[in-house]
Image (cartoon, rainbow, N blue to C red; front, side, top):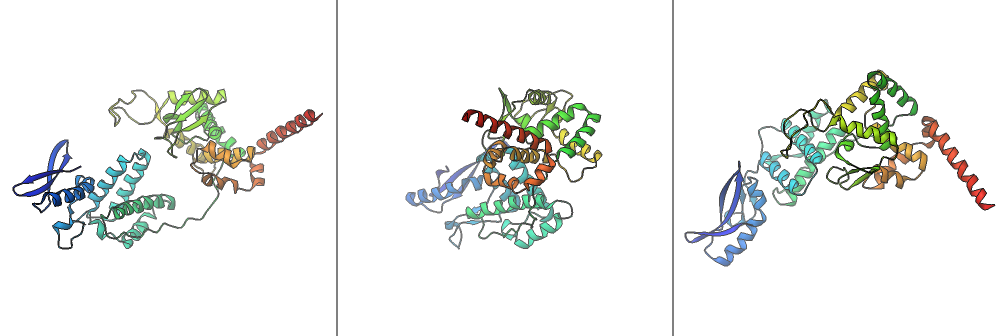
Length: 374
Protein backbone atom coordinates (compact mmCIF):
# COMPACT_ATOMS: atom_id res chain seq x y z
CA UNK A 1 0.00 0.00 0.00
CA UNK A 2 1.17 3.55 -0.72
CA UNK A 3 2.28 5.55 2.31
CA UNK A 4 1.36 9.09 3.35
CA UNK A 5 3.96 11.80 3.29
CA UNK A 6 3.77 15.54 4.03
CA UNK A 7 5.93 17.87 1.95
CA UNK A 8 5.62 21.46 3.06
CA UNK A 9 1.96 22.01 3.93
CA UNK A 10 0.47 19.51 1.46
CA UNK A 11 0.14 15.72 1.59
CA UNK A 12 1.47 13.27 -0.98
CA UNK A 13 1.07 9.53 -1.57
CA UNK A 14 4.45 7.81 -1.61
CA UNK A 15 4.74 4.91 -4.11
CA UNK A 16 7.96 2.87 -4.29
CA UNK A 17 8.97 1.80 -7.80
CA UNK A 18 11.62 -0.73 -8.78
CA UNK A 19 13.35 -0.10 -12.10
CA UNK A 20 16.47 -1.92 -13.31
CA UNK A 21 16.94 -3.31 -9.82
CA UNK A 22 16.89 0.14 -8.18
CA UNK A 23 14.24 1.44 -5.81
CA UNK A 24 12.75 4.80 -6.71
CA UNK A 25 10.04 6.91 -5.17
CA UNK A 26 7.13 8.57 -6.90
CA UNK A 27 5.18 11.20 -5.00
CA UNK A 28 1.54 11.52 -6.11
CA UNK A 29 0.09 14.91 -5.04
CA UNK A 30 -3.08 14.60 -2.97
CA UNK A 31 -3.73 18.35 -3.32
CA UNK A 32 -4.91 18.85 0.25
CA UNK A 33 -3.69 19.96 3.66
CA UNK A 34 -6.48 18.10 5.46
CA UNK A 35 -5.31 14.78 6.95
CA UNK A 36 -8.72 13.06 6.71
CA UNK A 37 -9.12 13.99 3.03
CA UNK A 38 -5.51 12.95 2.38
CA UNK A 39 -6.16 9.54 4.00
CA UNK A 40 -9.20 8.96 1.75
CA UNK A 41 -7.26 9.94 -1.36
CA UNK A 42 -4.32 7.75 -0.27
CA UNK A 43 -6.65 4.76 -0.41
CA UNK A 44 -7.61 5.61 -4.02
CA UNK A 45 -3.93 5.87 -4.98
CA UNK A 46 -3.23 2.50 -3.34
CA UNK A 47 -5.92 0.89 -5.53
CA UNK A 48 -4.00 2.05 -8.62
CA UNK A 49 -0.56 1.21 -7.22
CA UNK A 50 0.04 -1.71 -9.62
CA UNK A 51 -0.71 0.49 -12.62
CA UNK A 52 1.58 3.23 -11.33
CA UNK A 53 4.38 0.72 -10.75
CA UNK A 54 3.84 -0.53 -14.30
CA UNK A 55 4.62 2.94 -15.62
CA UNK A 56 1.06 4.15 -16.13
CA UNK A 57 0.56 7.89 -15.76
CA UNK A 58 -2.66 8.03 -13.73
CA UNK A 59 -4.56 11.28 -13.23
CA UNK A 60 -6.82 11.19 -10.16
CA UNK A 61 -10.16 13.06 -9.80
CA UNK A 62 -8.60 15.84 -7.70
CA UNK A 63 -5.92 16.38 -10.35
CA UNK A 64 -8.03 17.10 -13.47
CA UNK A 65 -10.99 19.23 -14.56
CA UNK A 66 -13.16 16.18 -15.36
CA UNK A 67 -12.93 15.09 -11.69
CA UNK A 68 -12.55 11.45 -12.75
CA UNK A 69 -9.86 8.78 -12.81
CA UNK A 70 -7.99 9.10 -16.10
CA UNK A 71 -4.96 7.56 -17.72
CA UNK A 72 -2.69 10.09 -19.38
CA UNK A 73 -1.43 8.72 -22.71
CA UNK A 74 -1.59 5.09 -21.58
CA UNK A 75 0.32 3.63 -24.52
CA UNK A 76 0.16 0.08 -25.80
CA UNK A 77 3.54 -1.06 -24.46
CA UNK A 78 2.81 0.31 -20.97
CA UNK A 79 -0.68 -1.17 -20.95
CA UNK A 80 0.53 -4.60 -22.04
CA UNK A 81 3.37 -4.69 -19.51
CA UNK A 82 0.98 -3.69 -16.71
CA UNK A 83 -1.39 -6.43 -17.82
CA UNK A 84 1.30 -9.13 -18.01
CA UNK A 85 2.75 -8.18 -14.60
CA UNK A 86 -0.70 -8.55 -13.09
CA UNK A 87 -1.36 -11.92 -14.77
CA UNK A 88 2.00 -13.25 -13.58
CA UNK A 89 0.97 -12.50 -10.01
CA UNK A 90 -2.15 -14.58 -10.63
CA UNK A 91 0.11 -17.57 -11.34
CA UNK A 92 -0.65 -18.07 -15.04
CA UNK A 93 1.19 -20.97 -16.67
CA UNK A 94 4.29 -20.20 -18.74
CA UNK A 95 2.63 -21.66 -21.85
CA UNK A 96 -0.26 -19.18 -21.50
CA UNK A 97 2.13 -16.27 -20.98
CA UNK A 98 4.03 -17.38 -24.10
CA UNK A 99 0.80 -17.22 -26.11
CA UNK A 100 0.20 -13.71 -24.77
CA UNK A 101 3.73 -12.75 -25.78
CA UNK A 102 3.23 -13.99 -29.35
CA UNK A 103 -0.12 -12.18 -29.50
CA UNK A 104 1.49 -8.89 -28.47
CA UNK A 105 4.31 -9.33 -31.01
CA UNK A 106 1.76 -9.98 -33.78
CA UNK A 107 -0.36 -7.01 -32.72
CA UNK A 108 2.55 -4.55 -32.68
CA UNK A 109 3.71 -5.78 -36.09
CA UNK A 110 0.41 -4.49 -37.49
CA UNK A 111 -0.39 -1.60 -35.16
CA UNK A 112 2.87 0.32 -35.17
CA UNK A 113 4.21 3.47 -33.43
CA UNK A 114 3.00 2.38 -29.97
CA UNK A 115 -0.32 4.32 -29.98
CA UNK A 116 -2.34 5.21 -26.87
CA UNK A 117 -4.35 2.11 -26.05
CA UNK A 118 -7.57 4.18 -26.09
CA UNK A 119 -7.01 4.87 -29.79
CA UNK A 120 -7.02 1.21 -30.88
CA UNK A 121 -10.32 0.41 -32.59
CA UNK A 122 -12.24 -2.55 -33.95
CA UNK A 123 -11.08 -1.53 -37.43
CA UNK A 124 -7.46 -1.92 -36.31
CA UNK A 125 -8.19 -5.48 -35.18
CA UNK A 126 -9.99 -6.26 -38.43
CA UNK A 127 -6.86 -5.08 -40.26
CA UNK A 128 -4.83 -7.30 -37.92
CA UNK A 129 -6.81 -10.34 -39.13
CA UNK A 130 -6.32 -9.47 -42.79
CA UNK A 131 -2.57 -9.10 -42.37
CA UNK A 132 -2.28 -12.39 -40.44
CA UNK A 133 -4.46 -14.56 -42.71
CA UNK A 134 -1.92 -15.29 -45.49
CA UNK A 135 0.72 -16.62 -43.08
CA UNK A 136 -1.19 -18.18 -40.17
CA UNK A 137 -3.98 -20.70 -39.72
CA UNK A 138 -7.41 -19.51 -38.61
CA UNK A 139 -6.99 -21.38 -35.31
CA UNK A 140 -3.71 -19.57 -34.58
CA UNK A 141 -5.22 -16.18 -35.42
CA UNK A 142 -8.24 -16.86 -33.19
CA UNK A 143 -5.97 -17.92 -30.35
CA UNK A 144 -4.16 -14.58 -30.54
CA UNK A 145 -7.40 -12.64 -30.94
CA UNK A 146 -8.72 -14.23 -27.74
CA UNK A 147 -5.59 -13.11 -25.89
CA UNK A 148 -6.02 -9.57 -27.25
CA UNK A 149 -9.71 -9.57 -26.31
CA UNK A 150 -8.87 -10.65 -22.76
CA UNK A 151 -6.27 -7.85 -22.57
CA UNK A 152 -8.79 -5.13 -23.48
CA UNK A 153 -11.40 -6.61 -21.16
CA UNK A 154 -8.88 -6.51 -18.30
CA UNK A 155 -8.17 -2.82 -18.96
CA UNK A 156 -11.88 -2.02 -19.21
CA UNK A 157 -12.78 -3.84 -15.98
CA UNK A 158 -10.17 -1.78 -14.10
CA UNK A 159 -11.38 1.49 -15.66
CA UNK A 160 -8.02 2.03 -17.35
CA UNK A 161 -9.85 2.60 -20.64
CA UNK A 162 -13.28 4.15 -21.15
CA UNK A 163 -14.29 1.84 -23.97
CA UNK A 164 -13.01 -1.38 -25.51
CA UNK A 165 -12.84 -2.43 -29.16
CA UNK A 166 -14.99 -5.38 -30.19
CA UNK A 167 -13.00 -8.44 -31.22
CA UNK A 168 -14.62 -10.69 -33.82
CA UNK A 169 -13.10 -14.16 -34.20
CA UNK A 170 -12.75 -15.82 -37.58
CA UNK A 171 -15.35 -18.41 -38.44
CA UNK A 172 -13.98 -21.94 -38.46
CA UNK A 173 -16.08 -24.88 -39.72
CA UNK A 174 -16.64 -27.45 -36.99
CA UNK A 175 -14.97 -30.74 -37.80
CA UNK A 176 -14.34 -34.00 -35.98
CA UNK A 177 -10.84 -34.57 -34.54
CA UNK A 178 -8.29 -36.03 -36.93
CA UNK A 179 -7.16 -39.47 -35.73
CA UNK A 180 -4.83 -42.10 -37.20
CA UNK A 181 -6.26 -45.46 -38.25
CA UNK A 182 -4.47 -48.76 -37.62
CA UNK A 183 -3.55 -48.95 -41.30
CA UNK A 184 -2.07 -45.43 -41.34
CA UNK A 185 -0.24 -45.98 -38.06
CA UNK A 186 1.33 -49.16 -39.39
CA UNK A 187 2.70 -47.24 -42.41
CA UNK A 188 4.08 -44.47 -40.19
CA UNK A 189 5.81 -46.97 -37.88
CA UNK A 190 7.33 -48.77 -40.87
CA UNK A 191 9.02 -45.53 -41.96
CA UNK A 192 10.04 -44.77 -38.35
CA UNK A 193 11.87 -48.12 -38.03
CA UNK A 194 14.06 -47.25 -41.01
CA UNK A 195 15.12 -43.96 -39.38
CA UNK A 196 15.39 -45.17 -35.77
CA UNK A 197 13.53 -48.18 -34.27
CA UNK A 198 13.11 -46.24 -31.01
CA UNK A 199 10.86 -43.74 -32.79
CA UNK A 200 8.25 -46.47 -33.28
CA UNK A 201 8.25 -47.11 -29.53
CA UNK A 202 7.81 -43.38 -28.91
CA UNK A 203 4.85 -43.10 -31.29
CA UNK A 204 3.21 -46.15 -29.70
CA UNK A 205 3.75 -44.61 -26.25
CA UNK A 206 1.95 -41.38 -27.17
CA UNK A 207 -0.88 -43.20 -28.95
CA UNK A 208 -1.47 -45.60 -26.04
CA UNK A 209 -1.19 -43.07 -23.17
CA UNK A 210 -2.79 -39.92 -24.61
CA UNK A 211 0.09 -37.76 -23.37
CA UNK A 212 0.61 -34.29 -24.77
CA UNK A 213 4.02 -33.78 -26.37
CA UNK A 214 5.81 -32.28 -23.33
CA UNK A 215 4.03 -34.14 -20.50
CA UNK A 216 6.44 -37.14 -20.33
CA UNK A 217 9.24 -34.69 -19.50
CA UNK A 218 7.39 -32.25 -17.27
CA UNK A 219 5.80 -34.94 -15.10
CA UNK A 220 7.24 -37.20 -12.40
CA UNK A 221 7.18 -41.00 -12.40
CA UNK A 222 5.42 -42.30 -9.29
CA UNK A 223 5.11 -46.07 -9.36
CA UNK A 224 2.96 -46.98 -12.36
CA UNK A 225 1.86 -43.38 -12.93
CA UNK A 226 3.23 -40.29 -14.63
CA UNK A 227 2.07 -37.34 -12.52
CA UNK A 228 1.92 -33.89 -14.12
CA UNK A 229 1.81 -31.02 -11.61
CA UNK A 230 -0.99 -28.38 -11.85
CA UNK A 231 1.39 -25.66 -13.05
CA UNK A 232 2.39 -27.85 -16.03
CA UNK A 233 -1.02 -29.38 -16.77
CA UNK A 234 -3.21 -27.64 -19.33
CA UNK A 235 -6.35 -27.97 -17.18
CA UNK A 236 -4.53 -26.40 -14.22
CA UNK A 237 -4.90 -29.44 -11.96
CA UNK A 238 -2.84 -32.54 -11.19
CA UNK A 239 -2.99 -35.10 -13.99
CA UNK A 240 -2.20 -38.74 -13.24
CA UNK A 241 -1.47 -40.81 -16.35
CA UNK A 242 -1.38 -44.59 -15.74
CA UNK A 243 1.58 -46.37 -17.38
CA UNK A 244 0.64 -49.95 -16.54
CA UNK A 245 2.33 -51.70 -19.47
CA UNK A 246 6.02 -52.47 -18.78
CA UNK A 247 7.00 -51.76 -22.39
CA UNK A 248 5.44 -48.29 -22.23
CA UNK A 249 7.19 -47.57 -18.92
CA UNK A 250 10.52 -48.65 -20.44
CA UNK A 251 9.91 -46.28 -23.36
CA UNK A 252 9.06 -43.44 -20.97
CA UNK A 253 12.24 -43.94 -18.94
CA UNK A 254 14.33 -44.12 -22.13
CA UNK A 255 12.74 -40.96 -23.53
CA UNK A 256 13.45 -39.04 -20.34
CA UNK A 257 17.08 -40.21 -20.37
CA UNK A 258 17.78 -38.87 -23.85
CA UNK A 259 15.49 -35.86 -24.09
CA UNK A 260 15.42 -32.43 -22.46
CA UNK A 261 12.99 -29.52 -22.36
CA UNK A 262 15.32 -26.76 -23.56
CA UNK A 263 17.90 -26.70 -26.33
CA UNK A 264 21.49 -25.63 -25.78
CA UNK A 265 23.59 -25.14 -22.67
CA UNK A 266 23.71 -22.30 -20.16
CA UNK A 267 21.14 -21.49 -17.49
CA UNK A 268 17.41 -21.75 -17.13
CA UNK A 269 15.36 -18.74 -16.03
CA UNK A 270 15.44 -19.95 -12.42
CA UNK A 271 19.28 -19.96 -12.52
CA UNK A 272 19.77 -23.74 -12.63
CA UNK A 273 22.17 -25.17 -15.21
CA UNK A 274 20.90 -26.70 -18.40
CA UNK A 275 22.03 -30.30 -19.06
CA UNK A 276 25.39 -30.49 -20.78
CA UNK A 277 24.74 -33.60 -22.85
CA UNK A 278 24.20 -34.63 -26.45
CA UNK A 279 20.46 -35.12 -26.28
CA UNK A 280 17.62 -33.67 -28.29
CA UNK A 281 14.73 -31.44 -27.35
CA UNK A 282 11.29 -33.04 -26.97
CA UNK A 283 10.03 -31.25 -30.11
CA UNK A 284 12.35 -33.59 -32.02
CA UNK A 285 9.65 -36.29 -31.78
CA UNK A 286 6.98 -34.15 -33.43
CA UNK A 287 9.40 -33.22 -36.24
CA UNK A 288 10.31 -36.85 -36.84
CA UNK A 289 6.65 -37.87 -36.76
CA UNK A 290 5.91 -35.32 -39.47
CA UNK A 291 8.84 -36.66 -41.49
CA UNK A 292 7.57 -40.24 -41.20
CA UNK A 293 4.06 -39.14 -42.27
CA UNK A 294 5.53 -37.41 -45.31
CA UNK A 295 7.53 -40.51 -46.25
CA UNK A 296 4.40 -42.65 -45.76
CA UNK A 297 2.47 -40.20 -48.01
CA UNK A 298 -0.08 -39.49 -45.27
CA UNK A 299 -1.19 -35.86 -45.51
CA UNK A 300 -2.72 -33.40 -43.04
CA UNK A 301 -1.51 -35.37 -40.02
CA UNK A 302 0.04 -33.83 -36.93
CA UNK A 303 1.71 -35.21 -33.83
CA UNK A 304 -1.26 -34.17 -31.66
CA UNK A 305 -3.38 -36.56 -33.73
CA UNK A 306 -1.81 -39.36 -31.67
CA UNK A 307 -3.64 -37.95 -28.64
CA UNK A 308 -6.89 -37.80 -30.62
CA UNK A 309 -6.26 -41.41 -31.65
CA UNK A 310 -5.93 -42.41 -27.99
CA UNK A 311 -9.28 -40.76 -27.25
CA UNK A 312 -11.26 -42.43 -30.05
CA UNK A 313 -9.69 -45.83 -29.28
CA UNK A 314 -10.69 -45.55 -25.63
CA UNK A 315 -14.17 -44.43 -26.63
CA UNK A 316 -14.49 -47.43 -28.95
CA UNK A 317 -13.31 -49.84 -26.22
CA UNK A 318 -15.30 -48.48 -23.27
CA UNK A 319 -18.24 -46.52 -24.67
CA UNK A 320 -17.90 -44.37 -21.52
CA UNK A 321 -17.28 -40.70 -22.40
CA UNK A 322 -16.80 -39.73 -18.74
CA UNK A 323 -14.06 -42.32 -18.36
CA UNK A 324 -12.39 -41.06 -21.55
CA UNK A 325 -12.63 -37.46 -20.30
CA UNK A 326 -10.88 -38.42 -17.07
CA UNK A 327 -8.09 -40.25 -18.92
CA UNK A 328 -7.62 -37.28 -21.25
CA UNK A 329 -7.31 -34.88 -18.31
CA UNK A 330 -10.01 -32.58 -19.66
CA UNK A 331 -11.43 -29.92 -17.34
CA UNK A 332 -14.95 -30.70 -18.58
CA UNK A 333 -16.59 -33.68 -20.27
CA UNK A 334 -18.05 -31.18 -22.78
CA UNK A 335 -14.58 -30.95 -24.35
CA UNK A 336 -14.47 -34.75 -24.72
CA UNK A 337 -17.92 -35.13 -26.26
CA UNK A 338 -16.55 -34.21 -29.69
CA UNK A 339 -15.09 -37.74 -29.90
CA UNK A 340 -18.50 -39.29 -29.28
CA UNK A 341 -19.83 -37.59 -32.43
CA UNK A 342 -17.56 -39.66 -34.68
CA UNK A 343 -19.50 -42.40 -36.47
CA UNK A 344 -19.05 -45.66 -34.56
CA UNK A 345 -19.11 -47.72 -37.76
CA UNK A 346 -16.21 -45.69 -39.11
CA UNK A 347 -14.19 -46.32 -35.92
CA UNK A 348 -14.89 -50.06 -36.14
CA UNK A 349 -13.63 -50.00 -39.72
CA UNK A 350 -10.44 -48.07 -38.81
CA UNK A 351 -9.62 -50.13 -35.69
CA UNK A 352 -10.63 -53.74 -36.50
CA UNK A 353 -8.26 -55.25 -33.90
CA UNK A 354 -9.94 -53.31 -31.12
CA UNK A 355 -13.35 -54.52 -32.28
CA UNK A 356 -12.19 -58.17 -32.16
CA UNK A 357 -10.66 -57.63 -28.71
CA UNK A 358 -13.89 -56.07 -27.44
CA UNK A 359 -15.98 -58.95 -28.85
CA UNK A 360 -13.74 -61.48 -27.07
CA UNK A 361 -14.06 -59.55 -23.80
CA UNK A 362 -17.85 -59.27 -24.17
CA UNK A 363 -18.11 -62.99 -25.02
CA UNK A 364 -16.05 -63.96 -21.98
CA UNK A 365 -18.19 -61.72 -19.78
CA UNK A 366 -21.40 -63.35 -21.05
CA UNK A 367 -20.03 -66.83 -20.39
CA UNK A 368 -18.96 -65.82 -16.88
CA UNK A 369 -22.45 -64.44 -16.14
CA UNK A 370 -24.12 -67.67 -17.38
CA UNK A 371 -21.72 -69.81 -15.35
CA UNK A 372 -22.44 -67.78 -12.23
CA UNK A 373 -26.18 -68.14 -12.83
CA UNK A 374 -25.89 -71.96 -12.85
